[in-house]
Length: 401
Image 1: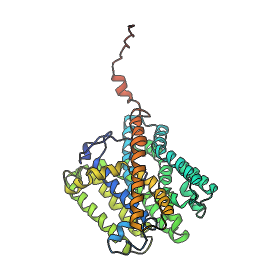
Image 2: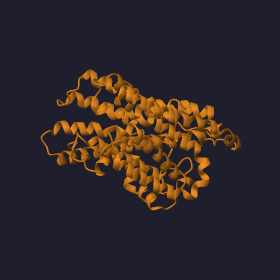
Image 3: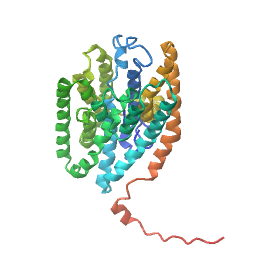
Image 4: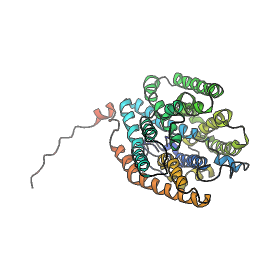
C-alpha cells in the first residue's frame, strides 16, 4: 500500500521512543505499524488469487483481516514522515522541491524499474500470460509515469489486472507534487496551513462519497481527488505535532486505545455493506489511524502495544513494505496461472516462498544500497548559518611518496 511503503529520511533504531528520534533516525514503532498494514494488504489480495474468495471472508471477525481496506494508513504514515522532513528543511532554509522530487523518483524507481523489466520479460516468455503486448506496454508506461490510477479509470478493461494495486503509488506521487510547494508557501503560517488541511480533508471525503454515488466504486477507489484524504491527514498530523506535545503523558493510553480501535474496525469490515472502506468505515479508520500515528510520535513509552509494534519481524516487514507492496500481486497472479490444478494450501506456500525470495533479493541488494546512497547524496546542503560558522580549512597538499 505505499508508497509507500520505507522512507529515505530515516535511519534505524530499535527504540520505541520516537520523540527523540530527531530528523535522521528511524522510528521502530512506525515500521512495525507499516508491517502490520502491508500484511493486511497482502492478505486482502490473496483472496481469489491463491485461495477461494469464500474460504475466509464469510467468517465473522477473521474475514475482516482478509478484506483489505487498510492501505489508507500507509498514506498517513508516509505523509507524516515526509512532511516532518520538509518542515525541518524549511526551518533550516534548505528546502528544495526539485531535490525532493529527485529523491522520491530514485526511492521508488529502484523497485519499479526492476519490476517493470521483470514483467516485460515474463510477458514475452510466459505462454500463460494472455495479456496483449499493447496492454502490457501501456500498463508499464503508466505505472512508471505515476499515471496508473488515471489510466485504469479511463481504460478499466485494457489495464493489466495484476497491476491494479499500484494506483496507490500514483496517488501518492501526484499528491507529493504539491506537498513541498505547500510547505514552502505556508510553513511559516502553521495555523493557516492546519486550517487549510482540515478543510481539504473534509472536502476530499465528501467528494469521495459523491463520486461513489455518481460514478461508481472504481473511480472513487483510485482517483487522487477521492483517495488523498489519508495523505492530507498525515500532513496535518505532522503540522500539528508541536501543539500536541502537552498531551505526551497520555500518549501511551492513546496508543493502546487507538490500536485496539483499529483492530475492531478491521474485524467488523466484512460484516458491513460492501465498499464501506470508501465510505463511513474508511473515514473512521483513517482518522483513528492518524491518532495512532500521532501517539507514536508523542513517545508512548514502554507500553505493551509499543513493544509489539517494535518487534523485529514487524520491523523488517515495514522496512521491506515497498518491495512487498509492488511485487506481491504480480507474483500471486504468476503462481496462480501456473498452478490451476493445485490445492490452495500448496499454491499459497509456493506463492509466499517466491514472493519472499523476490522481496529479500530486491530489498537487500537494490533498495538498501540505494537508501545508503541517498543518505550521502541528494541531501540538503548545510544551513547557511551553520556553514558560515564553520572555520575555513586549508587543504593539505599532497606529498609525493
